[in-house]
Length: 420
Image: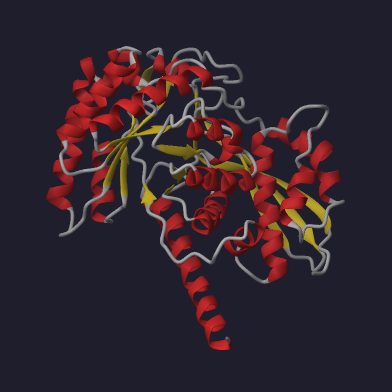
């Protein structure tokens, strides 16, 4: 294959699709004033509790003057649970110009894994910010796909020796704070997995979890009322550690509560994301393993989903090998290079754990589309509708990209069969 050199690099500041939020301040009880939060931020890097999400686009100018793009950003709750700090466009732009651009101009972009490995070598003895890895790896993936006149998914399949995928990956939507309206939208659109729920405060969880339990029952009831015949989604709730905060950090008590949630909506598969935060990756693994073991022994239909304290590829490996989760949220900007997202899915599959290619509402259309290609290529168990919190936009971006991709792959498969 011909070498592909990058002629030049462009940088363009941009907007993420939502906001960066100081999770610690919100958990501590920061009051909402309309869409804003009142009070002083507590997490390093936040000038206020809620700030508009920023992003940085990187464009690679190829030999034929084609420009391919990728987008850098961090997740909504930056700086929480061991994550990289809040995204600073000027700082990231400066580091990209100094450390990354010279490397990009020196690699063969036709060799995708090799190019990523070279570009993402440590700089000044430190790993590059994960946002940089994420955005640059998207652009390099698009460059390789352009050269080979193929899809990004096929590049991933080729690099990891995977068969061309045929299965559609289920899509998971998140509601944001407009829970009731957005749940209705999800049901009417027959979303595969719903509703997230954003249970991120004591008010939303309720004393002893009562408010949360009532919400779970309402979602199931609403699904039966509005859903078309045969519609039976997975119910997935992100509780941001509130089971542990309200019920206590004893694994047995947490497992008991999770069983109670599942028993509230018999007949549904229930995912509970981030039931508790035990303060460190090691403690999280030890205690989540106990919770998972209790649920499995009881034969519960509930599944534990890990997010906090499970950020990087190595974190994911530790969790799945310790059987400390049923399903991993592979939070794409936190994992870094999109190559590592692909590796993470394959590690989950090898350990018979569910792989959920997630991410954040703060992402962009470009990062969401690249995530679809990796999710479909690796045949993840589910993927997040992103970016933003509006349901409609995210579901159309991710859903339409997947449908277009599967149509192209099917045509490729038919043509190959006819030629053969």
